[in-house]
Image (tube, rainbow over all chains, first blue to last red; front, side):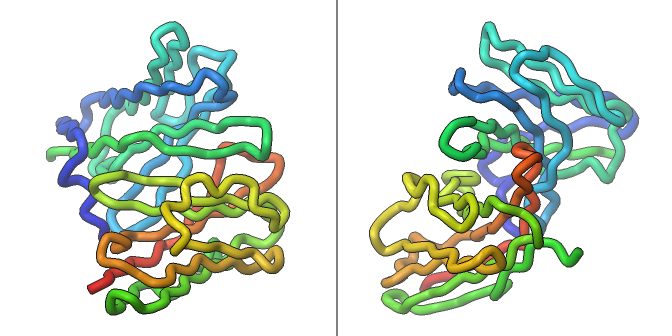
Length: 113
Length: 114
């Protein structure tokens, strides 16, 4: 697959530990912030989103936190598993004119056994 | 549903040649996106369509790039003439009107221009 990891920030965690992946955004007009996961050789896949008027949202083993004051978004993965190894992207949806979906820089998550 | 289908999966072409990438979105989705992924620039939005109409093509790098969506079930991204710096993985994604955050991606087309 695409070797996107060579220039990406990398987070290495032990299996079973919690992972925290961070993202900074710049566009205050975004109405949703989203996390996507990309496994090697595949396209990105939706994980979870959060509306801009919220500060926390929980899913299954994942939690997204939004701090609009400092324009920071994070994804927490509980009890990280080997299958969580992938590149994670934060994304923004910009409403008006058709909901433009743009992606930030990815983070490579490596889960060590 | 088969998901978003892109073709070809791999394309190797010589500099100066025309390249056409194809995408079939998921039936019922009204938005279609073209992205380019490289190590240097990450995942860049090139252009997107809503209801077959191009909404924003500000990400298209040069006039050598063009995209069309003649109907709701087909889109093309064309590069003419191609250059080595166009080498990348090109992704197509589609999305439902009522779900603006969840885009479904195809497997991508790996383009190599030599």
